[in-house]
Length: 318
Image 1 (cartoon, rainbow, N blue to C red):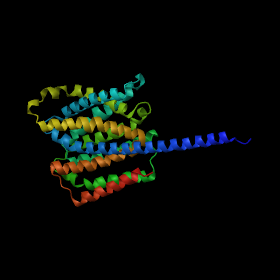
Image 2 (image 1 turned 45 degrees about the vertical axis):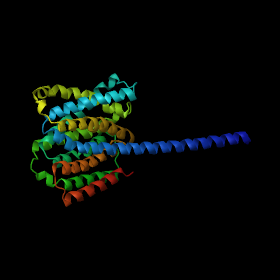
Image 3 (image 1 turned 180 degrees about the vertical axis):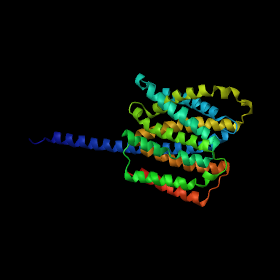
Image 4 (image 1 turned 45 degrees about the horizontal axis):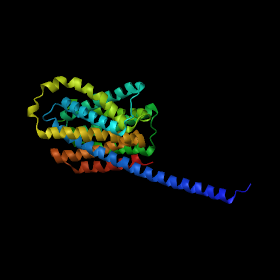
């Protein structure tokens, strides 16, 4: 049966509308993708700068107190934003334990270990060791069947790790590098890599902001309880204004914003690709060390930085 003119025009009109809608969706996806990339870059810069901020704050504030204040403030701020942007967001009973586990892993263990380690070792050592977080996340993702990295991506990860080894080779022998601090940062790297991969299970049921907020709300009270003796024993009148600014930066930008942006990236492009931005954190950390602590930037470190950037490029290719 032949279609009538009206039916033909209707079919063509529907096809045109479908094509127009597809174009709009593609543009929206492009804008959303660009926003995701920009947010991850900002989060990387904030986290990298947090190396210097935390190390500076630790000169007058005990590390455990820094973690407690940082995540208590960030948790409340993130929860307030969550209530405004997603008023219907509620944590299901069956997800209480997974979210609490993420909070203990990412905040109570990972961030506490990182802050202690950074106060006991050099920024160079901390950067090198913590940059292994993608390796632990990748291995865990493979074990759980959550990630299927490509050969090019694996090569990129290997090159980035090799580049970081070049950048921080001198730092391994620098004054102030302690075994206890190195081991503490290594524990933090394992925890952060595992946190990123394990959070993917909850991203299927909650928004990125919710997945960043609820673990923080669970982890912060644990650190607060443990840090009570330290908080009571600290002479707060002797803490300089600069240290408070550093802690505030760490809470607002390096925690509230960065954690939410990180989870958004995980939900859109996967944990394997998001973890590659860890290397940008390392580069920013190197720059902050040079600017604020006078660390040397030798030719070998510059060469290592070039290898890192090549690795980041290869790991992001599809």
